[in-house]
Length: 257
Image (cartoon, rainbow, N blue to C red; front, side, top):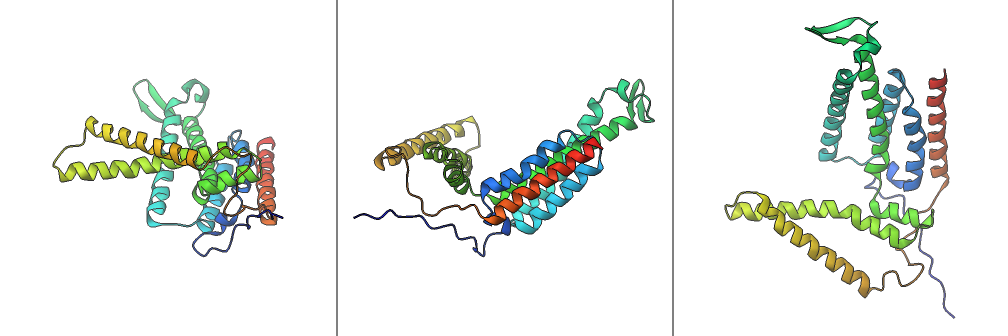
């Protein structure tokens, strides 16, 4: 008599990870989705600013930070805010805000206070949505997301494992490009279009190796496959989704009010 092996639940007590990494990946996506959709209809400045601040606090407290990741986030968010605010300020139709005071005038070109308000509100809305989605992006492993899609949403593992390979391919290409650049630097060669040829060749070789490895392990031959561990859905995941829905309802309430 054979016994069916049951994969153990994922260990959520790893000391190297933040508390957000213990949550189910689908729970994090479901938690930020309502607020993100609700923010599309927000037109004031206060609501997206509060959402962005709360989301950043949650991210700071619950994510695992490295110096490189911290610098990237701290630099990208202000740049995104500034570029979006200036862009939408300049793109705003002046006829729609003609009744507001003029802040800048260069000949016939004018920048009204209403255009600046629209630009700032739009920038805060975009940044709030971006910070919300940084929560699942920075705290979720691609393999865990694929496992959750397979185990909770019942997506075929052929699809989920293809997603894992696709998500890991850009990082591998960057590492290989750094190796090619270092090799050319040692040989005294400049970086040019010719450096793309070995990168493409390496990508093709890697794709062939993945295909051969999958075929040798009979990938796709069976309807189900075993996993090293199970990404479980727990009570804290349900609580996080409920909190995300309440946040979305609160934002909708501010729009209606």
